[in-house]
Image 1 (cartoon, rainbow, N blue to C red):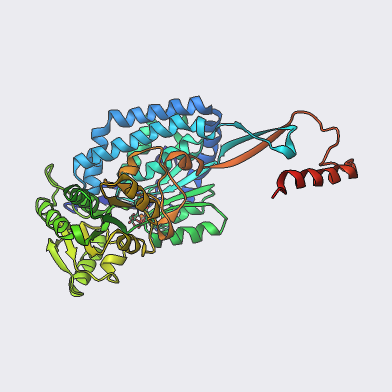
Image 2: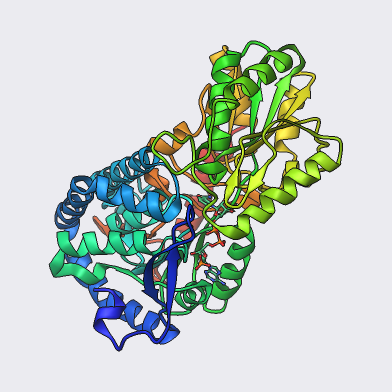
Length: 498
Ligand code: NDP
């Protein structure tokens, strides 16, 4: 149950707005620090029950939740479309990916986290050694608005599958989507309703969650807010997972399929109105392909259109404040010798598809996260120069490489300073549930998705069980002096060989 139905009603409410029209869609309670603490306390009780379900029970309940979401997918996608502004079809895709992650996490958790025997080694040959990954307890998830289902699900589904209860604070721009997910949980798993709860409010509610007695915070949002969350968590040594922003680059090499690279660059840069943490914000094309690439990119960009109808390529900017950032970056690019080959215009929440060239590398439009439907394209000598420019950023979330050589592509991808890179596509790694998702540098640390994403919400537990007593024990005051002398000889023989 959400707090609003269980405790005294919250005194304050806030509105969720349709970003296309500015109209109020729904009102939500601003949960107080006290109410957030109560939710976390209930989650601790629920966590014990959830843990007692065992792998099979948890998998069954997660499957029921997944089924509830899948059956009502169009309803949820419609809510995402209205609250976030993205086209309905993109919302369907987002929910589909999230459902796939619930499935993978629920199915893989026993194998990845369950108890297994490991080698005990020479020194402990008389011991059986076991490793298992135990749940932390209650995980607080703080999410953004740009992918209000897919992004928090990378923490929620994996934390639940690992045996934790979750208290989720959605962004103030997409609270209804967060409440929908918790309501779907209560419908699917009514007997364990408090295993997934949602608290709503503004930034202060998120801050309260960090101090409410959770065992970990999984934060997704801007690097600036991430710093505040970490500082707050430091007070009680609460561990944190940080999924922050990015300034991802695409490298287009000499032998790239230019039309495919342009198509992918546009999708990476402008789908979801460019409000994608792993979106492409910079392209480095080699001298040999630059002209053809820019021609192709601008002609394809000319076919895109912002709007809220079903045929629109992307929607309005979700957050009014972000429009100012986009406007500032475009103005800075144009004011420093850059040119807009398409777009450049900003009208209210609507930003034209904007391709920028000749922008100096030290410009804010190249260095800081823009989070709008814009992309800068720069000419470079070769892929090596492209790589060094791509890596010259404090962020390091994702990126892409286009080349016809698989070998060269993999090599460049491995050397890109980022948590994820796709060769000859964009964003593909996010749809592979077994691959970890996360960044380096200012893009954060820790991983969601995949085996690492499951382990992120656990603590490793080591257990030994003695199989037989050694005739000459090592870890005992009864140890004979000759034993250590013999040990020294054996170690010299085994490890000291030249
Ligand atoms: P914000 O950093 O503004 O907010 C993120 C979340 O933190 C929101 O729920 C917000 O609540 C909450 N919050 C705000 N202040 C505090 C506080 N003091 N303590 C605790 N929580 C707080 O990010 P956005 O929502 O604007 O999301 C966009 C950013 O997220 C971009 O930088 C994007 O790159 C990044 N992102 C990263 C992803 C990744 O996986 N690496 C994925 C998706 C987005 P409220 O909204 O109510 O203010």
